[in-house]
Amino acid sequence: MDGDFIVQADRAIKAERSRCKVACEGTQESNAATSLLREAIQTIEQRRANYGPPTEHFRRTVGMLNALFAHKLKEPFTEQDWPQIMLCDKMARHQERPIADNPLDAAGYAACWAEAMAAVS
Image (cartoon, rainbow, N blue to C red; front, side, top):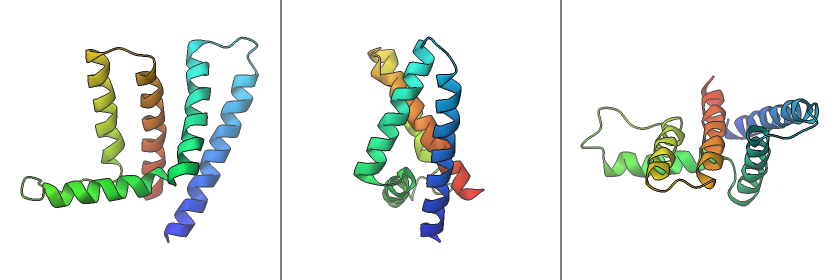
C-alpha cells in the first residue's frame, strides 16, 4: 500500500511540476510569486531526495506527538495536521523576525499539505 501511494504521489508531483513549468514559462518576466514557487519546487525536490516523501516524516512526527500528548488529545494528530502546524509556526516566526525564507518554507509546507491530503483521497 505505501509503495503504491509513493508512486501515485510522485506522479502527482511530476504532473504538477510540469503544469507549473508550462504556466511559468509562458510568462516572459518573472515576479516574486513565480520565483518563490520555482524555488519552493526545487527545495521540495531536494528534501525528497535527502529525506524521502514528506508524509513518511509527518507520520513519524505525529506518532511521537500522539504518544507524548495522548493524555491531552481528544483524537490523534494525522499526517495532514503536521504541515498545518508548521504553517502556523512559520507565520509565528515571521511575526517575530520577518525574513524571505519564511514564505518559501510556507509554500513548501502548503505543497506537502496538499500531498498529504491527496494520500487519503
